[in-house]
Amino acid sequence: MASAYSVSGFLRASRRLVGRGAFSAFFVVSAFALPGNAAETIVTKAPMAFLYEPGSGTILFAKEPDQPFAPGALAKVMTAATVFKAVKEGDLSLDQTCKVSEHAWRTGGAPSGRGATMFAAIKSDISVEDLLKGLLVHNGNDSAIVLAECIDGSEEAFAVRMNEFAQSIGMKNSRFGNPTGYPEVPSQTTVRDQARLAEYILESHADLYPMFAIPEFTWNKIFQRNKNPLLGEIRNLDGLGGGNDAESGYSGLGSVDRNGRRVIAAVAGLSSDKHRLQTLKEVIEGAWEYFSVQTLFSAGDVVADGRVFGGVTSSVPLVSEKSVDVLLPRGGTLDYRIRVIYNGPLPAPVNAGEQVGEIRVIGKDGIVYRSPLVTGGAVAEGTMIGRALDGLQELLFGWIG
Image (cartoon, rainbow, N blue to C red; front, top):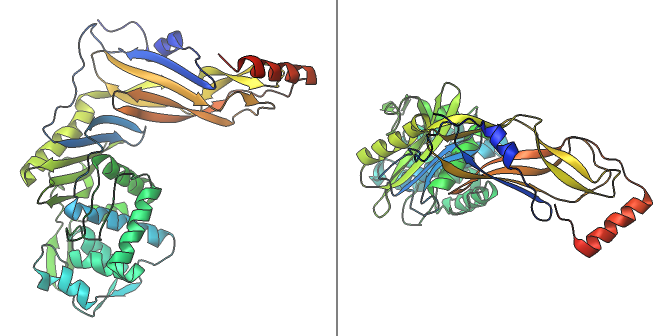
């Protein structure tokens, strides 16, 4: 028998205010539960795995998410994102041409004998758009180097740009040595950081993201199909890429959109291409097999009362700015915490609709969801005596809920 409590009702029943300027509630998600049963969840042999639902910002699964690994050719996804950003900011344009240097030709082209290439001819001029196709369809090492040199003059300077950019979007544990992923200059990343990179591309470069799924591309009279080993193997997967390293093994990053719900998955540390595909598929399928959408708060729901300093009233309702829809496990009984953080006490006057904090859903792997928290009403400034009494209370006792 399913629980008689709705998730939102359970939350309202368990709210309590704690600490200075912080609200925290603790609840058990049991909307589909048989009492006492443990929820089924994703099981994978991948040493590192991460599953993320960007629409709600929910972490669905994490296994060693911050363990570093060498990405190999997966670094080219970061190269593509760096170029996308440069195009968007006007540092170069898609129709701008770049010259193929001897270094790019010998290091990443046909003479290199080092894997994938778009077969760019030495000293030829190629548009940025075609180089991106060579990078994302052919997985071309020459494409990556030509783009790097075109933007910053050298691979080394471009790597600096990559790393500054990675840090700016929250890839805290990533460092890239070059645009190809060649091991001579080591690179490292994590499955969490790779998921963040995919989210960035989907959010900021939706117009260029479809390039990851172009089925084939002909350059220099040489026809090549898309070399992404994941495309066509996982239903509805439309990006991003894979890599391998002699020590770190095989890694993969993919995104799937089914019926308007998109997930991002990353795996690493696998022993073969076959195992990479198998584990990425089972992690992605787990999003639909083991999780369902639960509404924790509807837009405008009062989540807590925020303390007000120097106002005509001593509190103001804090409401959810938008519907808090989170993918939560089907069945079983799992512990989650809802924590509401705001900068309080709020000084009067307080305007309605002012963002003052956030709602956090916290699971065993840390924060799985964040959503803005706004004031649900206005509070005018109080009298001088009232403000003096509030000041005295804070001086003597501090603000406690």
